[in-house]
Amino acid sequence: MWNDTVLADGDDTVVVEGNHYFPAASLRREHFRESDHHSVCPWKGTASYFDVVVGDAVNAQAAWYYPQPKQAAAQIAGRVAFWKGVRVVD
Image 1 (spheres, rainbow, N blue to C red):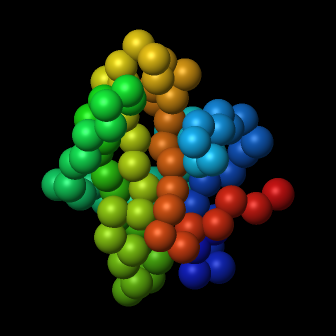
Image 2: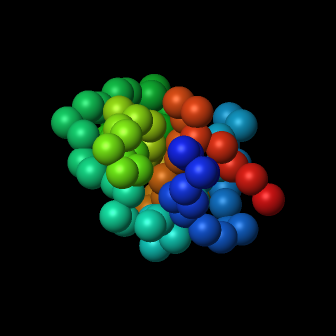
């Protein structure tokens, strides 16, 4: 959740380094737009980012995913994680 809005729904998450990775299919896509930001993790690979958008509010690069994770991180393929104030709630 961010700004009182559900961004992804489901309990099928994979937790890696304390982050919940949600299946991409569980995202409410209207709240996501591609970002041109990328980062590199030595064991997971290159991450791509989404900006989270709720109404006029934008949380830049608040969601990330690994389009082609390294073998050590294969369990997060096709999944998205959050930070920057996005809360995972039960």
